Image (cartoon, rainbow, N blue to C red):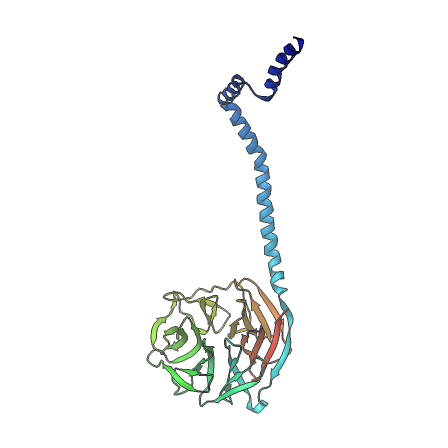
Length: 346
């Protein structure tokens, strides 16, 4: 009898420890519902605790961004050499018979087209090692050039007395032909570029510059003019799918829009004493341009046009043209007709 009594008295105690009584639960929930002021106090306390933490996080994020802005120029500069590492030099002619190099273009399979003008009027095709593959002797002065997807070359002529604004097409196989005679639209031509099955070429007439958009048959589809102000442009490049016109007196990049050339410069950096017609775009979207004073230098501008880096040169000639091949070698054409192949990346 004693054993049965003890077990019956212990059972409720054990149950009480494990399960909460329904009455107690109701009281707890009721107390929570009936005390909204306490909930507000708890929320306010949490807000007070989190506010300094959030402020600290914001300050930390800002300091990181500011630190990154300060470090970025240094990081950008670390990509490049401080002095060009010359791989090869293809010598021009002697002092009495030199030939400027105003245009260089690279094909999809890493062959290099080079324009020569002055005493010798030629267009040459080299392999990546600088070995001559083909040469075209001309009766006019070739200036700017641009490669087609199949490796053929577009060339504009320098403006001379009686010369027409003609776009020439050079094939890799050795054939040449006139692609377009733009006499009805302009007086002379300068920069040219191919993009998305269209040809864009700069025309000049009556001290005004424009960009003519041609189809693949050489027919003019559209004419773009600078707006809202009139500017003189000389060269044209393509960066990340966008086309930019460059002024001839200072380094100034102007975006080609759907219906006009913006007269407002988009670049945020200034490059003094540069030759805009020497500008090109490398395989990373950087802009490369030659500077001629106090001595020849290569200036690299980042794709956002915010930072620049200068690279010294061993030679003394003025830089007329640049291009980067598929092996990231920089090709440089000079006033004296010398063609340099150099490393510029670390």
